[in-house]
Image 1 (spheres, rainbow, N blue to C red):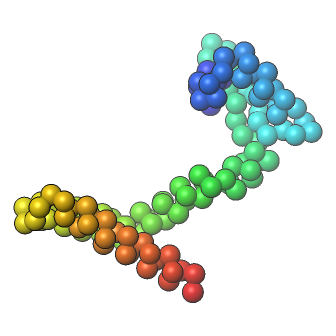
Image 2 (image 1 turned 60 degrees about the horizontal axis):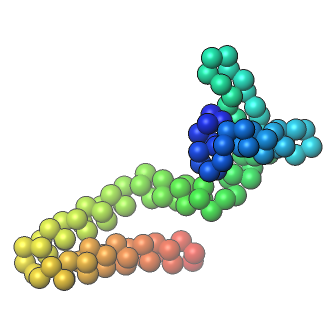
Image 3 (image 1 turned 90 degrees about the vertical axis):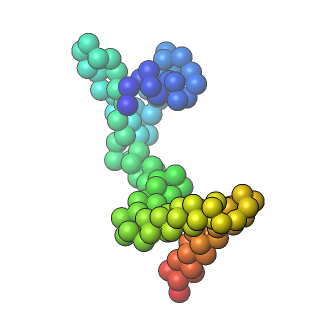
Length: 119
């Protein structure tokens, strides 16, 4: 990722972000590798140690779980059924009943999946 993008995400100036990131580019605790590209600027890439840390973060795990659910196709069925039930509910019932139609099938299926995988 470019230094400017990292500085923007961190909410710092590029100079300050560079000084913070350079600490983690040195050998004892090397997490990032600094890459200088002429004409394009400075980029930072995660090293092997940095990737090990990243793979342990909750955000990465949530992303992988979401990806596995979407790859199976079952989640697509849940989304489609909740969408169809909300459309049908809109025409048949009062608008206050729609959230119940949307969230109840999705919640029940996800709850069932959670407990069935733990056993």
